[in-house]
Every structure is written in structure tokens, then in C-alpha cells.
Image 1: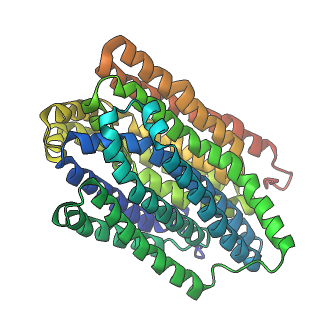
Image 2: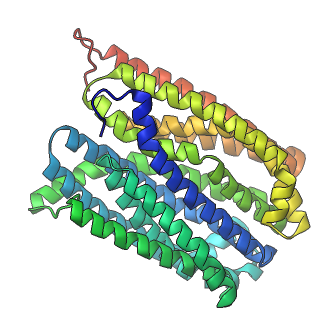
Image 3: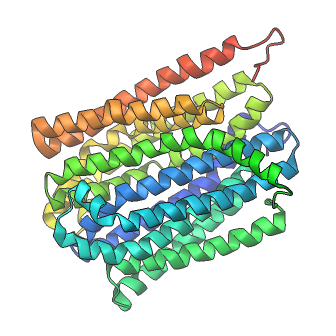
Length: 447
């Protein structure tokens, strides 16, 4: 929650930095995980590359639920309905856990069909099968962690989620070599290490939620029905907007697979570096919605405008600096992350070309988050869909068709830039301008 007299920039910093540290720790853990797997050879790394689009599908659903959680709980708290907010928290945990569990079962049952659609060779099937069982278990635990984080953030508490992210990441890094190499579990060992780390994190969050009384069982069927109706009204469009990226990632992986397993392995590792590179953006998309929700509740359009402007300027500048650093370190970093020379060379070229567009990508992600927080999940869905289906995928396909793998990288770069410009225009045109027109004679926005 904001403190009396605290500036907008200070609020944003206070809400963001714990999440930044937590996301940084999580992404670092994933990168170290990839480095360990890279030492097992190209095939295990390619197996993980084919796993990433499916993982993004699970992430899309859990993030969609997380967005809805933050929006409805912060709104209830702003209206002084603490009991309602607690009951909504318990509904989120129950509904989210059930949905992700069913999704994991469906993925396990259809794994061969999924791999075939993505263009994986049959030689990878046994390796993926041994990996996916513990990996899907870790995905479910990770989703429960995320729902817990969302409840804490909605209540204005970002410190504990950040600390738990750091703890689980450190545990994962420590346990990875033990399970992968010492216990000789290979690729599956990476997933078992994650299960242990996420299990510890879930235990901490459950105890903390009970101690702080952030969740409460609904008192009647009527309250459950009302809470689910409220949740679903936000979940459907916000989840659909989060499902577009993994579906497009599956199509992108299929396009990349035409260039061979080395290309898929490099693309998968590049995708993880991309996630690592946009940690500031991810932290901001977690920290900004509760702030925007409270400002929206108090009808303060000008403060929302200032908050978004500060975030966008910082992200674009930061990502340009980071892109220059990645380009300078592309060759040595690629050799450190993977032992195979051909795959390392492809990754180095990726790092030269694609990161320059991460500022525009970050801008687009912030616009999606802001539109959701302003109660416009359908606009967020349109922006997300146009970014990937109208800009990114067509350009990587065209680049691949014209100039092969290098053309694909150029297509990804130009696709991100075009999407960033498009999202900023749509935010200004369809979110801020209508809100400004809705201002009453008192100068306050009618929500």
C-alpha cells in the first residue's frame, strides 16, 4: 500500500524492486539449469527446446489467473471489503490449482501428438517422456506458487514473494547438479530439483497466508458463485491474451525446427535468455497493476498517465543498454552456455540480432498489463493477439522463407518493433482517450 506523501516514482520503486530481485533469481536459476542441461549434449537441450512452448501454455493460464487475482482482490480491498478479498483468494487457489492440474494431465496424455506437431524427431520421444512426468509436476507446483504471489501482491505485499523467489531459485541451483550428475538422473533430474525447490516455497507461502489471514473459505454457496462469476469475468479475456504467446511460440518452434535440432536448441536457449533480459519488464508488470487498480478506484487518470510514462521511458532505455551488452558478450556467453560449437554459433548470431528489439517487446508487455489493470482485458487481448499473430509470426515466417535462419532472426526483431509501436498507439487511442472523455465536470474519471 502507498505511504502518505510518497511520490509516484518512489511507490513504483518500492513495489518493483522485491519482485525484480525475485524474478532475477528465478531467471538466473533457469539459465543455470539450461547451462547444466547443455553439458548433457545437444539432444537434451533440444528436448527442453520443444518443452518451452508447452511450458508457455501453462504459464499463460497461470498468469491470466494471476492478473484476474490482482485486479479483483485489489478492487475489493480498495472498496474496504477485506472479507470478500480473503474469500476471493481462497477461490483463486482452488480454481487455479484444479485448472492447471487438468491441463498437465491433458499434456501428458497428448505428448506424442504435441511433439509431432512441433516437428520433433522420434529419437527425442523417450528422452522427453522421461523428463515430462516430473517436469509437469514442477509446473503445477510453480503455478500454485504464482497464485500465492498474486494474492500477496494484490494485498500490497511484494517483499515476501520476492524472498521466496530467491529462496526457491537458490535451492534449485544447489539441487540441480546433485540430481542431474551425482544421482545420475540426467535431464529428469533438473525437473526433480525444481519440484523440491517449489515444494519448499509453497510450504512457506501457505504458512504465511494463514498467519496474515489473506485467505478465507467462503461462507456460503451464494458467495462462492458470486466470487467465481467475478473471477471468470476477468479470467477469460486475460487468460486468452496470455495464451496467444505460447500458441505462437509453438508455431515459431515449428518454423525453427525446419533448420534442424541445432537451431531448435539455440532458439530454446535464446528464449530463456530473452526471459532473463526482460526481468525488469516482468517485475514492472507485477508491480504496476495493484498501483493502477488503486489509482483507477480513486479516478486519478493523470497519475496513471504519469506512472505509465515513467515505466515506458525506463524500460526502453534499459533494454537498449542491455542489448548492447548482449551483443558484445554474444560469442563468449554462447560458448559458456553450450558445449556444441554449431549450436553456440547460432546462439551468438541470435544474441547479435534479436535483443535490440527487447525494448519494443517490453513496451508491448507493459501495455497489455496496464490495459488489464484499467479494466480493459479485451483491449489487452487484442494487443497481445496483434503483436504475435499480426506482427511477430508473419515476419519470422517471411524472414525464414527468404533468408533462412538469419532471416528468421531479423523477422523476430522487426516483428517486436512493429508490435511495440502498435501497442503504444492502441493504448493511447483506446484506453487513455476514452478514459479522458469519460471525465466528469469534477475532473474525475467515471469508472
